[in-house]
Image: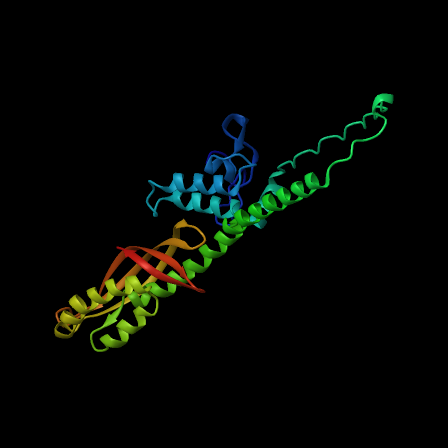
Length: 276
């Protein structure tokens, strides 16, 4: 950024990107961008619009790029109602001004020809009541089936934590204790993905590891979220895998990016797919 240290600084890690004015070269006032500017949405954008803008922005980015992390920070703030409210208050985003009440209009005096009000038939009132209840019920169903921003944020946090726990046993094995290694990994897999994992483990690892004496120990380095909704979350993880075997005197470390698809199964988040 242009300017002297301490002026117009954007605090990304702390989820605070301040809007306002700073002094650039030549003393000219330069506005600093907000999280809304980062995602290209207006301050009154709804959660779905923010989420769509975030997904479109990160679609072609590598997870290691700095802008990827910046976009994730912006989405995390704007999709969390409490964080967004605090951020808007800090920015001074104006609340919609209430419309002034209109002057009560003078009631027209009934003409002599229509001195009495017409009675509304009871069946009309009953029909209107039923219609209102039907509309309200339909609105309640829609509201209940569309996940809230808070629900998505909670799901994302839970799925990410589950992925971090799962990736270590899934990408680790010990040739001396293959049954234990397999059982530890299977505890984190959905039924469908367990079949794929067992096929790979039994056909490749269990066949070769005993003769080579290979042991692989995974270690999580860091993680991030690539896609998220209430029941399905994609998490990318950077993992170090340390391998030892009979042919190599010293441990060899491999660093891999892994994208894990987490799926909600009951109260748990399980791995339903993995790309390396």
